[in-house]
Image 1 (cartoon, chains in turn blue, purple):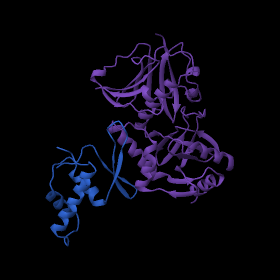
Image 2 (cartoon, rainbow over the protein chains, first blue to last red; image 1 turned 135 degrees about the horizontal axis):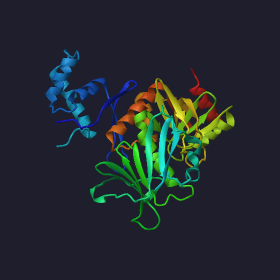
Image 3 (cartoon, rainbow over the protein chains, first blue to last red; image 1 turned 60 degrees about the vertical axis):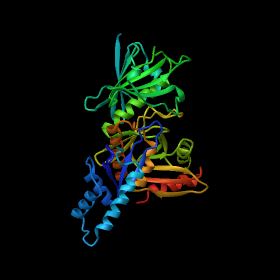
Image 4 (cartoon, each protein chain N blue to C red; image 1 turned 135 degrees about the vertical axis):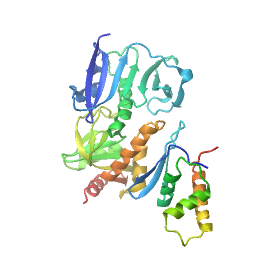
Length: 93
Length: 298
């Protein structure tokens, strides 16, 4: 899978957000919030093809998560992917 | 055609207008008159507008319709993109095939307007075209036009945002009536400019229904989104909520990634440098006083 192109994570005060301008006629532009880990992951994954295990590996290398097992991490990453999907933030094939 | 070129100093940016020599812009665009200026060599010309007496050849077949929604022009407005230009069209008269046109480079720096004979009366189409062009081109100079009503005292400007009909103008008038030393700077479309570590708010030639075209500037004290309520409640907005308070009042064209992204970056600078708040309010004296006092708390 791949993240939708042309979207940038920005820091606004304490929050990380993605502003997605609507490209249709009616302005339904949206602002999404990400937590710090998701924001970091977005930057890492942007423009690349990736699978869940890539995300787990990235998080393992970046964060101190030794006491979290793979099952839990995979579950968390799948939740994030689900969030991207529901909000139309993944590139559709 | 013998032409002349005039310069208007708006938000410390220069708008350059070139038109037939015999046309009198003091009559056609009286709202621009307070902004008329000599050319200033050390201020950027952010936007050039050229009036063509010859119709512009719009290739509809090879264009994409981006929008046909305009609160001001209704069904008469369409906005298109071709390979090299944006086209802002307004149908005029009763013949649906006749349009006034503005052809703009993708950064809106270079604009050509065809609107038949420019005439010799006040022309709101031309004023609006210039606003569209100026607003988009100004983004690249860290300047936005924002839908707001603004009051000033001798120290600061205070801007009120909100959906149409919320009572922005009414709230400004409450400040003028019940707080000392305040005047209206602009009632619809002021400009905000981010400079090195400070934010300035400027009057512009565009002020909606209120003829208030004041060429003046103040440091911006705060931006307050108004909502009607049966009580008065002032709350600071930070972080994402501050962005959500500002975004609906701004108008970068969202089909242009570069301009839109620039707008969001400017808004983030504004959020970092000034107070953003929401005021749920009644149209009364205590709403104005509450708002003023909260914004001036240290």
